[in-house]
Image 1 (cartoon, protein in one colour):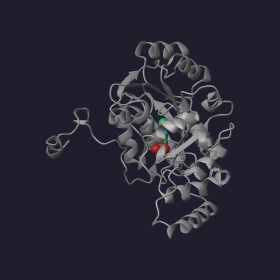
Image 2 (cartoon, rainbow, N blue to C red):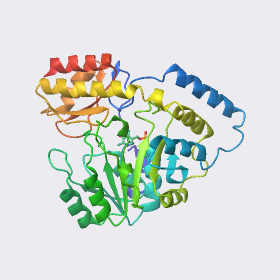
Image 3 (cartoon, rainbow, N blue to C red):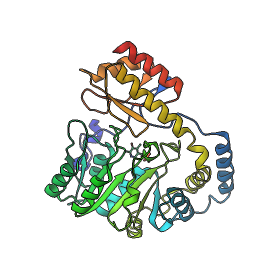
Image 4 (tube, rainbow, N blue to C red):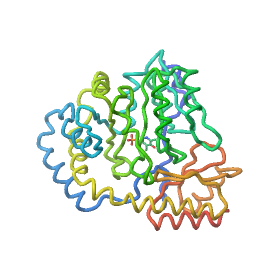
Length: 358
Ligand SMILES: *Cc1c(COP(=O)(O)O)cnc(C)c1O
């Protein structure tokens, strides 16, 4: 915090904080933010260009406030009998989660998550005045029914965050853990499924639990598998009453006409866009197997990244990789680093660098 900022009457809980953000360094192999490594196929670029061009002349008007057409497209993509009334979209799933906390958290209320998990959950909680409770996981990063039930019972949080597949560990949650939280929690249960498309076959989605569970929310994003991190489009699926609740706190016209047009056009080509998912999963499995061959400890992953260790000094390994022009993520977990699965060529460079380092 600069002297200037410290002199302002900023909220006490923000004092001393630094803005969130992974380093955006210029390196040739960038494997630190779990983006899809593949740029958009020409066919999708052309469709998005046409859709964007068609909106330009009408940008004097505010956008469609409730983004119904886009929400219907997202519901159709998800399946599970969902429709626009059960889906809500915003500028990234980060904004969706902020709206959920504005509606269901806030001053005097608490949110519980199970660390290590997505670092934005505590940050968005703090920013919305929601008290954050740092729940525990076992040493192998697993989360069992008895772990979660005991902690939910102890804290009675207004919001519980689960993350499956979990960032940064890559592990997904069995549905009985989600069900147990739903049975025990007095408030909302948010399952962050940002990496759902990368799950291994047979891994369930919490979407299956939506019928009959009014307090369950599943959040998804187009930032990862859909290769659209630059568009900023996240969404949720839940009971229609949850959608009504977030509509009470969302800013009017929060989703620009450009965002809606780009996302709808991309969704219409979901099959082409998601073609890269299998290639990414293949590189992920290759990273897991190869790093294990090198004698490292590697978490099983249902996502497009891999958590690996254990290092006496993960910062030194991070730096040594950077020297070799490879950027991975130090998620602040002593002994561990996280690497995104990139293209085969990027994975080659990363694995060759690791071979030198172990
Ligand atoms: C990357 C990520 C997101 C995506 O956030 P957007 O705002 O949709 O880009 C959400 N949750 C988790 C766990 C993530 O890792």
